[in-house]
Amino acid sequence: IFPHIMKARWRMAGVVVVFLLGLAFWAQRETDPIYEGKPLSKHLESCHVAGIGFGGGFRGTLLEGPPEPGLGTVEVGPARQAILKVGTNAFPMLLRMLTWGETPVDQWLRLMVEKHGLPRKLLQTNWVAQWENQTRALAAFHTLGSNAAPVASRIVPLLSNPETALRAIIALTLIRPEREDHILSLTNVASIRKASRTGATPDLMLSSALLALGMFGPKASADIPFLIGNLSTTNDRVQAAAAV
Image 1 (tube, rainbow, N blue to C red):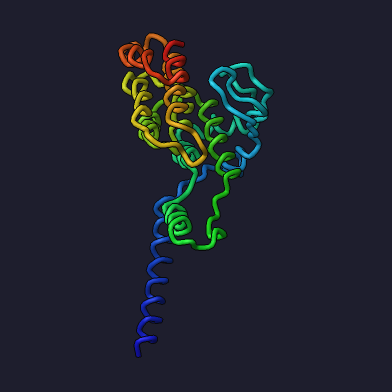
Image 2 (cartoon, rainbow, N blue to C red):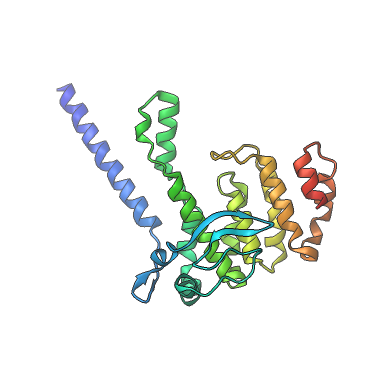
């Protein structure tokens, strides 16, 4: 009798897991806006970004435009047109793309693999797909610019997470919000104490946030005491960023 009871319990557990996964998928689904008969995500596939930096903006092909020397206007193209036309309706999908990464289930599987020696083939993380989705979201925010300011309040919480902090810093820099609390929230990354899974260290995140603050000029002047405090740090990278 005991084996039959255990099999029944395992079947019930499997049904519960499938149900919870389906519920999570349903709860997290976001509308993919349609423009000229094609989902916005498909339009964004024309965006190919080789890298992103505070000094040189995007490197590579950005929304079918030429390489740019800075954070200027993207050349007109189908993807740019789609983003501008969809406008605020694109926010939910862009936020999901920006935070694209391991799901809670992925994280649980990683824990099981690392702590209990389960087969590594259970891990299905696709780092290339994550990078592509995240950079496409940033390219879209670059195109929307200050028109995306209403979404800044949903980006700010990402600054405290080592897995999303760098993307959030860049997104806020591209959106250039006017609200002082959104700008000053860039210092939230100072609370991060561990590196991300991709190797971004806390000092890299903090120095990036300090450089981003500098791009807001006088609007970030309330953070001057914070900057002065970082001038005396023993970390050369953070000290230099604070000085800049």
